[in-house]
Image 1 (cartoon, rainbow, N blue to C red):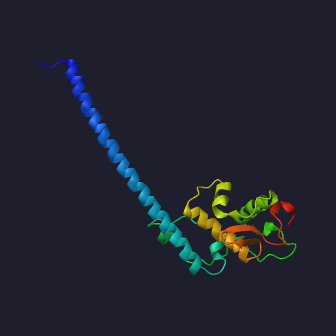
Image 2 (image 1 turned 45 degrees about the horizontal axis):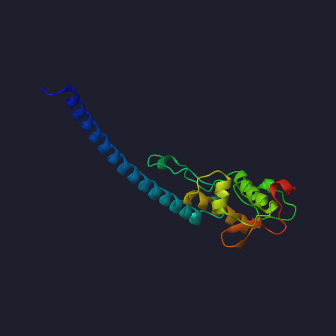
Length: 178
């Protein structure tokens, strides 16, 4: 007759093997999940870029949209040209207040203005994402880059070197009475 301790050791060994096998499987699934999430993020970025290119001027400024699932596509409104409040970035003129911008654009302008006020030089979109507490992932950085480029095109920001943004000459930050 086998000993009780021997039976316990045998069952413990079998349980340990099962745990090790499940951990290996979990690691494999986790790696596969990470790869799938990265691929999905690339498709989200590609879709946003296509939307930006195909959208009428200014319609892409509404900010990031939730990506529709396969069943939600049929429920989306037919007209994407409908005006959204404060979604357009107006061309800056002297004396124009930053309050004409949507909150997302005001946040970008504020971050750049704070950087200028502290004498730290131009701000990159990765730094901007970190300031906003966002994950510094390509999708977030590209969304911020799109907003910053739109502000440059409309005279609110300047881009002295590619990818680095500062206030445009004569522009003041949101707290500076503009």
